Image 1 (tube, helix red, strand yellow):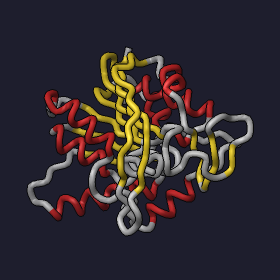
Image 2 (tube, rainbow, N blue to C red):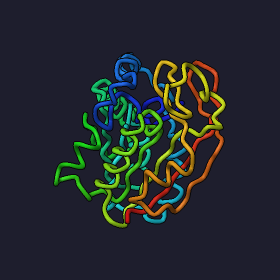
Image 3 (cartoon, rainbow, N blue to C red):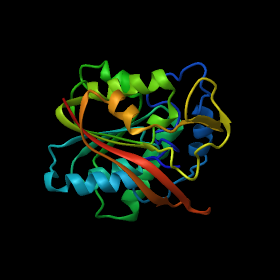
Length: 253
């Protein structure tokens, strides 16, 4: 499973979106343990979503761009976006272990390449907190969140979408990925969640949404592209995972 840094969400490392719903098993301890072990779960390269975002945004690369990476995990996508688009990025994650790992990886990346430049900050926080802060509300040109949405329960997903809209400036862009019901690695694995469709718990809660759900929850954005893609995800020291996910690009209304 992928994310900028956390499974299912670097964006999945704990709680980049505020407290979990009480009936949803908390993933925080799971991800804190993995990040606390200095484990680069998805290697050093960027996620599939980050590559797509850079390809879309490269003509607009500028130091004036502001990027928010929600659920940044150990920061691989935040660094990639900032370097490729020559701009500032803020990476947030609810896991202190993830943010500590991101800062260590940032320093290591700078040591490995004297020419590397990453204008990135890392902050232990969640998007709901930023949305309520006048310094961050409506500020960001680009909001990026890789594989967080599928870690949330029904109420959490709607609140998450609303908070993402609140931090995106009018006309700004959202890039989001989340697992599809066609995902061969994780769909229908574990225990089904009572009263929900396409939701299971296998170590962590996972929801596999439809295009209709995404369109409904992200009504604060004009959907520019919603594509279901299959791709391979490397796991250093383990077998490559094969995923099918939704990739959404939206413009803030």
